[in-house]
Every structure is written in structure tokens, then in C-alpha cells.
Amino acid sequence: MLPENVCILTPNEQDASSKIAMMGYNFVMFKFILFVIFLSTAAAAALQINDTRLPNQAESFGQFLDGLRINAIQKGISETTLNRAFAGLLPDAKVIEYDRNQAEFTLNFWRYINSRVSDNRLQKGVDKLQENQDLLGNAYEKYGVNPEVLVAFWGLETNYGKNVGTMNLVRSLATLSFDERRREFFTKELLILLKLIDEGKLALDVEGSWAGAMGNLQFMPSNVDAYAIDKDGDGVLDLWNSKDDIFFTGANFLQNIGWKRDERWGDEVKLAADFDFSLANIKQKKSVAEWQNLGVIRADGKEFLQAKQPAALILPMGYQGPAFLVYANFYAILRWNRSLLYALSVGYLSDRLAQKPLLVAKAIAEPSLSRFDVQTIQQTLNQMGFDVGKADGIAGPKTRNAVRDYQRENALPIDGYVGYQLFKNLQGQ
Image (cartoon, rainbow, N blue to C red; front, side):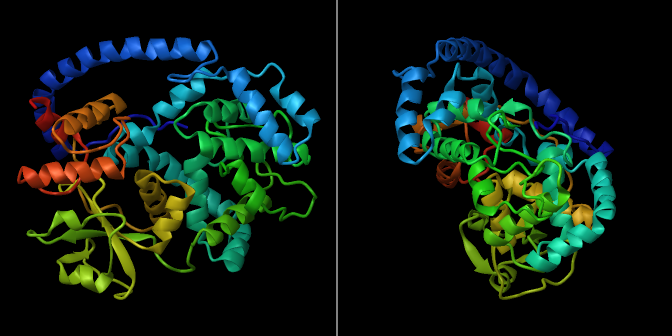
């Protein structure tokens, strides 16, 4: 499910938006020229997919399936199941298109959070909490996962079961396994899916998302295999229609990936005027007390609950945007989905469902960057000697570290943020 590319602005923010619009003309024209070049590349890639080949691959899809069949048989999957699963199977070009254009790659924090934690989703979540109060309470007693957290995952994954996906999972995972970007990961998931089908636990034509996830909470096959629970005891694992199975499976999974009972995921914070922004890194932890000594306070003015608790500081929109201290449960959310923006959305939606207030930070009206824009940033940084590795259009840890090096050398705030201002700064290089 892709969120709408919408940012809700207050009157004051609209003034800022007007200023950016005046700045943005050259930016738009520059993007248009680059986009024309990108279209020809995308068209060539689409032709390769239609020819059962993906970019930079010599083998055909059929040859790939032949190799996969040998691997599957070695793992005990029957030839009968493989014959049925692979009969007439072709790669799906739409799957690759979706993979290259995920919202986490193109929306900035405020546009992402406003689309995910919308008034409509919040109100529906409140209704779902009331409707399923007893069952969610039972799951909390057993696994320690707050009802608001489970409902937040449910709302963000499938809009409370409305969008569970209608794509054939065997075809989607076979396409992603054939692609080289994350071949090892998706091949493993495909083999587990085929095993579940072979064991009769899932139907051959099981449907889900383009990325291979299924059910109300969008579990990958490996998670279904390892953590799914038949809570209602009917002998069927039903993550589509049985709320007992859905909630207990979700809570069981979260407990197993590190969720800690009755602890917060994070807190919005404010930073001292002379704060060293280079300390903001998801991998750099200090105790809450140490962060306080560096000038970090809660944005709502309240005291931190646990001074000894390990925490990391993240700035999802750079030094001018909101700031968060995140704790162990935030890392559990990241094990569900590795996107920082997704994890922040789960945390924030769960807080709003628990009737906690809005964020203190005010929205920044900043244009989002496309994947191609990020790729341009990466290429420029590489040319300047700041190593981002492969220019793939994804602002991962290596890209952010390269940005920090660029910022440090140019006496800029060292926040590692890959955003509009960085794009503008690098245009003249």
C-alpha cells in the first residue's frame, strides 16, 4: 500500500512553502531534464523484463527456475508442488517497478508521517481498539505487547485488513528472487513459501503484497513458518480472517524480536543550541542520562522515565526537523521493517491511539526527493571523493556517512540528512 504523496500544512507553513516554490523553478527544470534521460533507461529495463531478463543478467528466467528447482528438491519440496508452482510462470515487471519506488525511498518525514498517521487511520484505529478490546488484552497479558502497538501495525500494514494484497505470491517472490538487488533474501523466502505450500499450510494460489508478504499483518513466509499461531484451535492458520490468529501471531512475533513489556519505543526531544549533530546515529547509543548531559530534553518538558536506559538519537529530517530518542522497542519495530520512517510511524500512531499528544515540532515544507534525485546526489558525492558505494538511489547508512563527511569538510551542520537542501548544494558541483 503506497501512501498518498501529500503534506498537510498550517498557515505559517504555507508561507515557508511559498518561499520554497520561488526557489524550486530551477530545481523542477533540472529534474525534468534528468527525468527524460531516466525514461529511456526505464523503458529499456522494462523491455528486458518482458524478455524474461532483468537488467545486467545473462540468464533467462527459465534457467533461473531450473536452478531453483534443484535447490528446492534438495530441501525436500516435492516435484509435484514445483511442477504446479512453476507451470507457465513468468516474471512480473510490476513487482520490480514497485520495488524501485517504495514510499520510504521518496517521501520526507513530514509527508510520510502525515499520510500514514492520518485522521482517518487514527479514528479507525480507535474503533478497532474498542471492538477487539478483550482479545487484544489477552494478547498483551501473554506477550506484553500493548494493544495500541498491535493495532498500529495492523493499520499501517493493511489499513486494518482492507488491503491484504491480491498478487500471486509465488510469482512475486520468483520475480524478486530473479532480480539481483536482494536475490539471497527473496530466494530464501520463496523456498519457504514453497515448503509451506508443499506441507498444505498455504494454498498454491495464495495472494499477498508485491514483496511476498501476506495476511492482515503482512508476514513474510519465513515469519509465518516460525511465528504463526493457530490461536483459535481450528487446525487452520488463518492470518486473513481469524483475529485470534492474527493478534496472537503478531504479538508472538514482536516478543521474539525483542519487544519489552511496558517500555516506550521512544520520545520526541529538543536539543541544545550548540548540540553536536554528528552524534545523531541509530547505531550510536548512550544512556538517557548521558544524552541529558549533552543538552537533550523531552520536547513536552516532562522528565525521562529511565535515566539508565540505552538510547540513540535520530534526526529523520536533519537538524532543522524533529528529533527523537529511541529505545529497545524501536529496534524491535525495525526488525519488523527496516525503514526508520516506518518505525517512527508505528511509534507515533501507537502514541496517538493511546491518546498521547501531537508532535511538538512544526512541519517543514520541503520538496521530497525522488529515487533518481538521490542517485544524482550519490553520483556527485562519489565524483567529489566521498564514497557512497553504488549509486542506487537509496539513502542507506553508507550514503549518510558520506554526507556527514561532505558536511564536515564544508563546515555544515553534520546531520547526515539526504534532503532537498543537500540536492541544491550539490547541483553546482
